[in-house]
Image (cartoon, rainbow, N blue to C red):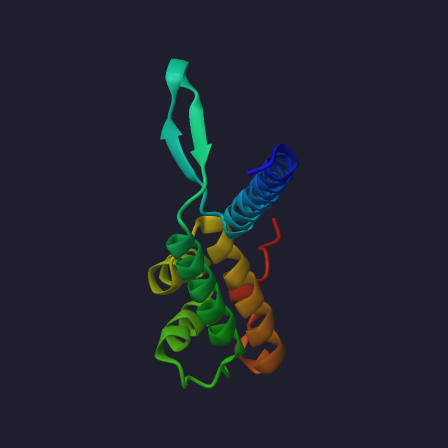
Length: 145
């Protein structure tokens, strides 16, 4: 094989490697961003008491997206008791038992406290809009001193 053909092949090989490295970096950045946004970054002990952060597998990312999708779909459900998971949570909210409602949300949908709190707040606002007659000042408003 002549030297100029060999040089051309080496140049093409180097260009392909560069493109592959760029694609790998972009994919790694996407995984890291998804893990951060989904709140599923792995934390493990590192040297000298430091915490090492690492991204989860693609399978775990997809599972988190599926779970998030299910939570969004559940929020779209009517609050008339057709979804038994939300009807129990709605009961706790309407009784003014937010901590128990928060725990029930975590039990039913998983996720961290921040995610559960966000779901609770969205559900509270939706119930207040859909069923204002079920809210009483004594259960849902801060007490005056």
